[in-house]
Image 1: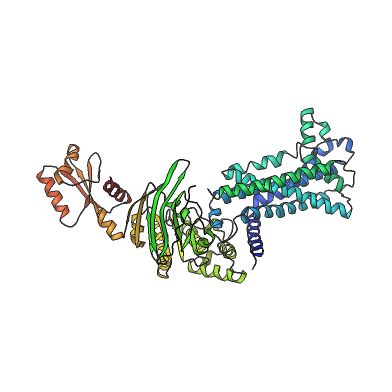
Image 2: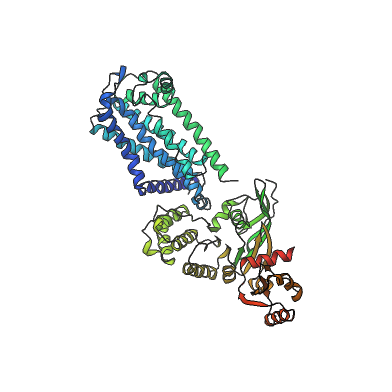
Length: 258
Length: 317
């Protein structure tokens, strides 16, 4: 058996373990999948009537769904940070390290499980959106690209979450990651148009990563012109992944050697 | 980290050999040169209080921590240079339980068996075997989070035995267990020993070391203060302690000169001595009586770890 096959097998066993853990934390599972949908219902039916979609001219549900998808992908990533921190601080890592497996498979399995779980949460949110009246009209290529953008976003957040989980020294501190993924979409062009915000927030919203990603998804799902957003979104996502994965690998090695 | 000299250990009679292990964390010396040898098929108890370096020693020997200096070989492989080979031969039950609370007992064992590459059906069989052997078959499909302390410990030990290691490290396996769970774990450890497994066990309890060990290494502040067979160690410490409560506190300092021997401990009204042989108790009371030191209460007590330390560190000083 070649080393690659063995490592792939180890990785998949650990991914299954991580996903299984997810299904056992019932409240976490409900929060991560249902909360974005609840927020969507709240915005579409309660606040939506009062929110102008500004120069976009979109119905509010069409305007807000891309941001809801990103939220759905983000909540689970916060759980990933907590799971990594708990493995690192509560002894499991010692068990894994005495097994004849590459130690790197432990954080890598957290990234993979996080991507699988969060892409599933996005699909769930999208289905709920369609039930609520969202009518996406992308081309087949548009669907493919939408999946690619969502997956890339989830991958970027998941690797960032693993990095954060390795950086902090307690499970409680790891939970703080949820603030980032909770608030960033609100301060973007995703929930209300940035043009309606006060100037300093408008500048922040226009220049933070969520805005170009939301605009790219809007363009893809509603078949509208995208402008420079896709290039900007791709740059943000690629940079995040390319920085956080090596940083996490380095940090993991440091925390398991000393 | 300074150079670890390359001494290959080819001595097959010793499963674990450590020489001069040192380790400090941020200026605090945790190991100040630990030497120990565990002959194959025997149990060595590493006895010491909290913070004496027991866990650090185990972490070095199980490849989880690189030593600053010294050498160690486990199963004939150097722990720093041949970590992977060492890991294939050992099992570790760490002080902190290292099983997944959210998985069932069976899922835990199947996960670890899978990671030892036993194959799907091999892993399933091995898990079932261990669940039965450790009396966990009834709870196999329950989440570990619902287990009692004793059950968790047994599962943890079972997880360490998945790959049938010849060398086992048990870091305070019975700390926090009730007497019955402790006795159960002791009998499992004896079975493992009988089947030829080499075991290094750390403990804070002299009684546990005495019950299980072929040899006891006592460590304090990262240094070995005694390395002997249990019987010899106990002889050195004195099998029992004699606690004398005096009627007059001012007599306390007179006891040692009157008896012409060292006392292990004194409080405001009590003096503790090691009992040395049958005639010792009567001779002691006779001498005190002649010196007009009134004794109000006499108590015989088994030696505790504190007594061992006092005795050993006093002897060294």
